[in-house]
Length: 195
Image (cartoon, rainbow, N blue to C red; front, side, top):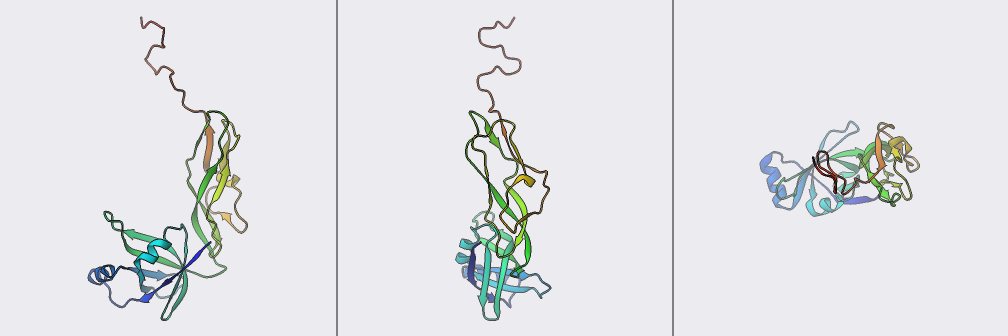
C-alpha cells in the first residue's frame, strides 16, 4: 500500500465563503477525525490531493505545522458538473490498527469456449492493517467451465487480510453465452411455416 505525503495547513475560517476562497486558491477544505481527537479542519493542495485519490484506499500522510498524521479518505465531495474536489473527510489511522475497506476484485483468464463470466460483485469488504491495505484480489477463470462459481469466502486474500462481508456473497460465476440466432418466443424458426 502506497503512502502519499501531502502538505496540510490548519484552517481557522469556516463557512461557504471561506470554502470558496480556499477552492479559488486551488486548495481543498478537509476535516480530519477519529481516535477521539477533536476534529481538525484542514486545507490541502488540490492537485496533489486529486492525484492521491486516484489510488483506491490511499494512505495520506498529512504533514505541516503541528500536523503529522496518517489518514484514509472516507468521504469525497466533487462538483457534479466540473468534477473538481469540493471537500474531503479523512479518517485518522494508526500503524497496526485494523480498518475495514472495499478492495476491487479483478478477473483474469478466459473460461472454456464461448462461456462468459458474470461478476455481480466488483469489490469486497475486507479488514486489514491500516498501513498494509491490499490493492485488490484476483480471480483466475482460465479454463473454467459453465457452472464455476466463486463466493467471497472462496477468495484467496493476502496475508493479514480477513473478509469483512458475507462469505456466501456471489462474486462471480461462469455462464453459457446467450445463443445467437435462436428464434425468440413467438417467432417461427427459419424454414418453418407459421400456420
